[in-house]
Image (cartoon, rainbow, N blue to C red; front, side, top):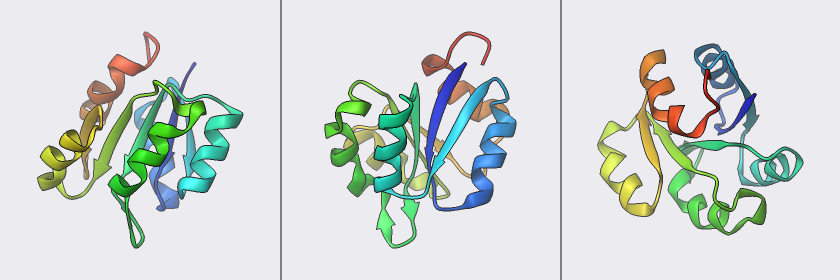
Length: 119
């Protein structure tokens, strides 16, 4: 089963993402420290990074995530209500982008290249 590490400070978002990706395990981390700890415990296949983490801009965390050995080579997909940030996110080095609110099919399409067949 594929594993998605969702870095999002909204507790309900993990349930919604898990519902949309019913064949994948969704592990939620509300901040960088927990994300790194979860990545070390159980290597994710893809990271879904919210760009609005309280007062932190998710893109500020990107270099730290990329330098974490447990996340080496793991694709990172930006996830935000600000659809206008897609170009910025991609230029910063994310591997994909999903705007909120999202349709389940759009989320599945964005993550499909990184998940096991059937997810």
